[in-house]
Length: 394
Ligand SMILES: [Zn+2]
Image (cartoon, rainbow, N blue to C red):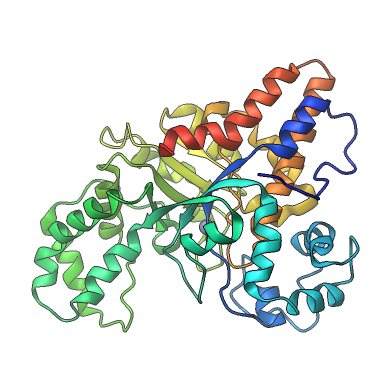
C-alpha cells in the first residue's frame, strides 16, 4: 500500500532509517472512519466540514482555512491537486472544485496507505460513499460497524403508531442486534450525543424498556430520536452481550453534545459491571480526555482507545497529542483511526499526521537510547495494525 509520492517525514530530522521506512510504508488499519461526500459540494459546505464543533455556517469575518486542518490541507493535500505546497486557500479551493468527488477520492484515499477501513455506516447527514465505493476508490478492504441508536430508531420508524411496538421492542431489538452481529465487525454507540455518560448503567428490565418506548412513541417526533437513558442503557448492554467490540464516541464532537458529560471517567459504573467485562470497549477520539482514556485502558483489560479526529483537528500540533497518547496506556490497548468523514483530505491527513507523529516521538526516544529501534518498529506495527486485527478479528 504505497503512500506513494508523499514524503510523509519531510522536515523531521534524526529518525533512524528503519523506523522511518516502517512509519512511511506500514499498511494501516483505520479502525474508525466514515465515507466521503458522494456529490459535489460548495465552498461553504467544504469549510463547514472541517469545523467539528459548530453546526453553523462559518462566520463571514473568517475562513476555516485559517485553522490547523486548513493549513495541513494546504501543506499535504495541495501537491496531490497539482499545486505547490502551502498553496493559497483560494487556489486550493479552485483546484479542488475542478475535480469530481470520485477523482478526489482516487487521488487522496489510496495515499493514506490504509489496507483496511472499519467503517461506521450509521451517520449520513448527506450522501456519503459506502464500503463498496471506499474499497474501489482506495484499494483497501472494508468492514462495517453498526450504530445501535440507528438500529433502534429504524425499528420504531418501521412501525409508526403501532401499539405493539413497545411490548415487542426488547425482543425485536435483540433480534436485530443478533442479525447485525452476523455481518458486522462491531457496534457503535453515540450515547455521548444523546444523554451523556452520566446515566444509570444498571441493565433495565424488559418492562422498563417497553415503558420507555411507549413514552418515546407518545412524544410524536417526526423523526424518532433515541434520547432516553433507559433505552441507551438497554441498547448498550444488548450489544455488549454479543461480545463483539463496542465503539463509544468519547470527547470532541459538535456542540450538540455536552462535552463535559463525555469524559470517559463517567463510564466507570458501566466498565465495572461484570457483564461488561470480556467485551472490548473501544473509546473513540477521546480528545481532550485522551489522558483519562489512557488511564482507563491501563485500568481495564478490555478498554482500548485512539486519538483519531483529534490528530486531524490539531494538525501540526498532533505530535504532542500522539506523545500524550503514549503515556499511561499499554501499547496493546491503542489503535489508529482517522475518523475521516466527508472530505477525503481527512482520511489522508489522519494517516500522514499519525505516521509523522509516531516517527518523531518514538524516534526521539530511540535517539536518546531510551527505546531500541526494533521496539519502536514493533510498537508502530502494533498500534497501526496488530491491535485492530486482533480485536476485530480481521
Ligand atoms: Zn466518527
